[in-house]
Image (cartoon, rainbow, N blue to C red; front, side, top):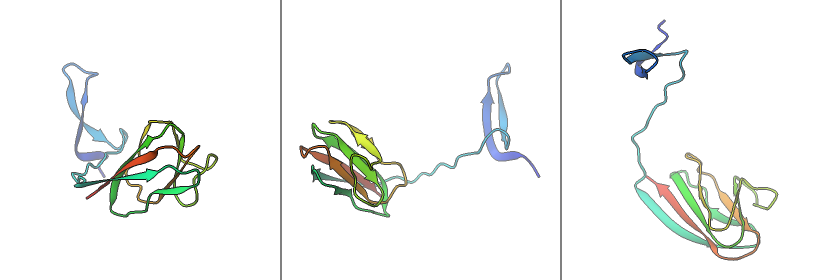
Length: 127
């Protein structure tokens, strides 16, 4: 059985002149690249709250999402079920900061602010 990946090469600059060298199974794993793209960007705004609120509902069609903390207060975001809090959160967003939801995450996102002030500006990307 061959240890070379089909049609994958890397440019070896350690030799002169540089050579295109086949990628072997010892070199690393090849990465598949998809040509799929999101076709729709939907914006929403979620008013800040001192109690946990839904920032984005679960959506299996989601390709990605961005959240901008348009507040002077910290926003605690939780990816996953349950209420967000200052002690249970995925990320702590400073005032006027931006967050990109990890690619492929389609679950619920909740948030809570240190003090109700401003809002979260949300953009959800779908096919």
